[in-house]
Image (cartoon, rainbow, N blue to C red; front, side, top):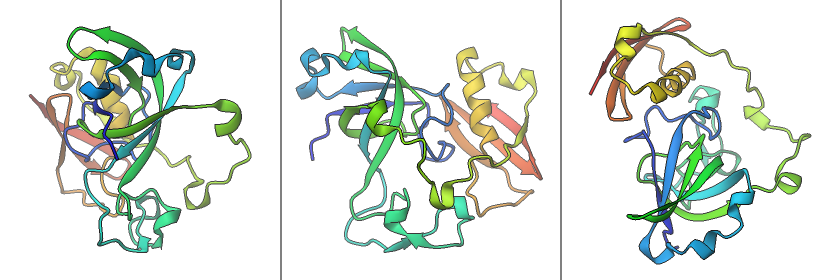
Length: 222
């Protein structure tokens, strides 16, 4: 498979990334095409679509050693389901699928035509192998059922973060960070109130702990 592009996002590692695309619309990303595919003609007509599908490569998982069952975080990390009934990265072929909003198409001097998107659940530098338009009449199924993931009403965490602590973070990144924290970035099977977790976001290290239904931001450092 040919890598056609890479995406730039605010997440240097997978920790902290929302578990599905579109959950935090404020998360921005830029898709930069590989030199071979920097041809504006290949994007002709794409700007008429509001959303696009990204087919991309997981940085981990796949290969010869795969398991027919996995433990989805949605089920607490203890219940197994079939790998093909999940979106786990640990599958025979390490391919991910994300639907993102196309915010704009820009011509740049350095990278040619780039795509600006929002709602992406991809790590910085993730390799993209295909881009397809989202077609509402075919891709939207209002009567679809969601199996074990049907419950999207899980309560969000209350986030406690002093304004002074948020100050070093660029203003346009603050809402996205708070919404990421509300979704509880911890692995679903971890509930240690004494543990301090940390992840990278937009060039900063975010450290936090969780007590009951409240997440406390402990530190934000460059």
